[in-house]
Image (tube, rainbow, N blue to C red; front, top):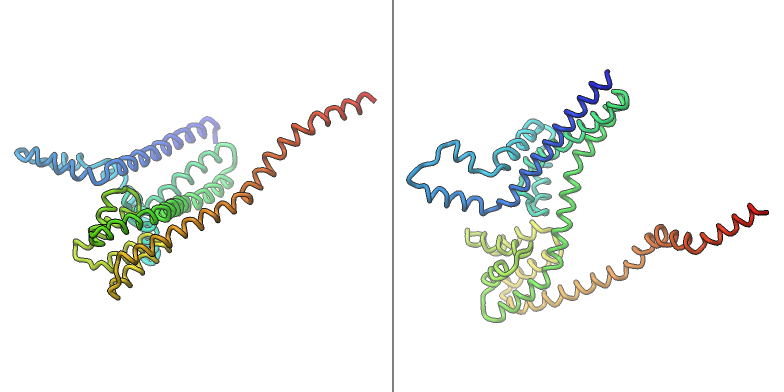
Length: 316
């Protein structure tokens, strides 16, 4: 094939891929920025224009970009490749998304579509780049490997978000239990204490308490709501806390005493984790020192001596 034609095909392909990536990125930013306030703003707009009903086109355009373009595209890709995703994997993916905090409010269908989209984009990009300088067979093999990597990249991203969310929950849980203990000992009920924590903070543990209170208002028992929170977080400390609260409710033990004991235990665990991380610091510093700091020191200390030895040898 003519090199000019290959260059033209590569330029068009790269422009298409960059445009698609920017399209998805803009849609994700719109989803994250809009959140729940978007529905409220559209309701207020409709209420202010109650005398003039919105047309179907205006209602469609009032939705965020992610709802109109990005989500249908991901759902379409997922539907097309739905035979590759059995029901068990969908349930497992639903659990993974819950542990990650439902990023961008995606479900298994949207996330599977994202995986297909990233795999196709990365595969086409690598194929076009390799085809410019290599044969078709090498480009095809490279594109196949890139497609598999692209299919797995969203899973790595989701796993990273899960770890960050669980770390945030572990760090915030002792302070949340301290606040719950103070509020309950002051005379407020446990449900009201969870509501106060949800109103005071804006982190993952406060969002979990807010979801528990919301489910209880919808008729779910406190036991089931707490278990749902535990299942959506996957943190052993939260499991211990939920089990203690449920047991106290069943046995009629004072919630304030249980919270006091739990808060003390969580503070002890936090201190132990900090000590464990401090003990790991020398081991973690060993590799940078050996491979980065020591070679530089050797060059600075032994470099002049090596130069002197070389000059002496050449002079003789």
